Image 1 (cartoon, rainbow, N blue to C red):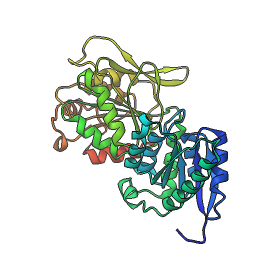
Image 2 (cartoon, one colour):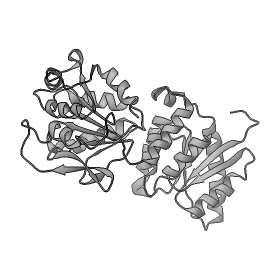
Image 3 (cartoon, rainbow, N blue to C red):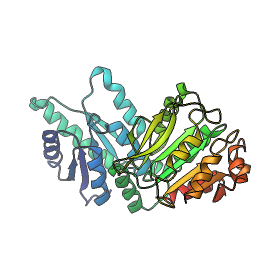
Image 4 (cartoon, rainbow, N blue to C red):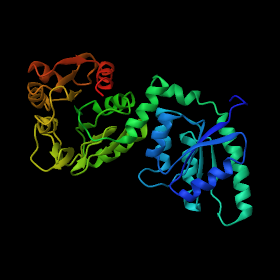
Length: 353
């Protein structure tokens, strides 16, 4: 950092009194300027889009989204040095270790606020930690994210944390060879895309773990789909392996839901069931449906129905498929607008925002 410039700090903590105390403590140092405070990560993301701080102080335990989740997303999308300022009981110290592993520059334990000696100690340690963090080289974090302009990155963070309701939708179906391909695709996507619903043929006992793994790997929020769950931008919903996954519109909002029912194309969840449930719900060109590698024909008829309703319908190309079954059937039915490699599919998805 330029020694003549003050270190711009954003404080993120759900307690108003603690935000006020931390502001006073930090601004005792003439090198530091607190440019803003936020009660939660969503509010923080909006502020980052306006003025990017040099350092963020972050509490780990907050409502709406915990600090570790925010830290992970931040390092993936718009890396900024972070100092964790939180309470750590004996059983929760592993949270601090996890925060460091995710890229936090340092940890400062909150004091007992009624103890002057502990407060003085906090002030010294916090100011030193912020100064050290401001010198941190974030190159390794920035190299890992998609190469986009800083303004675009900041905007993506805001779009993600605004979590607006869906007005577009992306549907994906896959079977054999799909799990690693889906992982690769999701890691390459922008974080402000419309909701993504995925049917991957796999046993029900494993879909929750699959969703958790994907969530840990990429900047989008990935979860196992629930019942009558509102669809949010920046989110990916993995079909529960025990139920069909469907899309509905309730009171002008799009939701996903779980449905019992017979096997369709020998599968539950079935890609055809998902695709057909969305037919007619979205205006032309507002829905993208993608059929990836897999054995059989599940999804082909549903894709044709979506194409006839004006959706953008995509099939993975033969060369990159582990099993060229489901996409092949869709191509033979003339159910697709475009055929492409995983790289092209990522490009088309990123341009669909």
